[in-house]
Length: 128
Ligand SMILES: [Zn+2]
Ligand SMILES: [Zn+2]
Image (cartoon, rainbow, N blue to C red; front, side, top):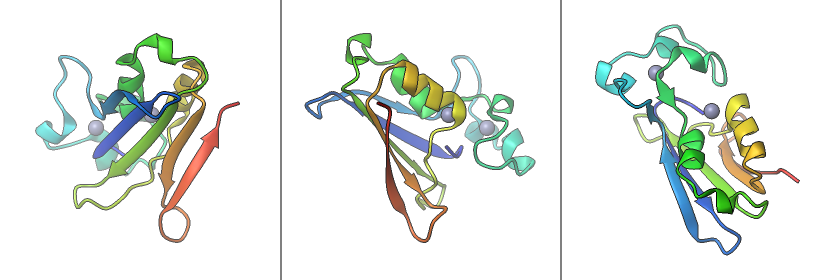
């Protein structure tokens, strides 16, 4: 998902929120927003590429790290939202690394917003 801001809600089978996460710098590193520059942005790196060049830990990853593993039972759902600095909805499809984390956390479904089509489209991806 894009760098600016990303928010995640992880819910269990009864739609109770069991974890949240947001895009942020790894522990001990300074946020790109605070530094005022991001290597990916400066180099116009497209969505989904070269995330290793940025200090951010993706919202999906943060939510999964902060979730009690007992919810990784095949019935939980992850909702991903993203917006830019002007509050426009961004493409929030999970990157390939996060997609794999979601699979291994045995989440059932993933909801995200796709802005590549005309307008904003809510997508649901089923993992089983
Ligand atoms: Zn960055
Ligand atoms: Zn990611």
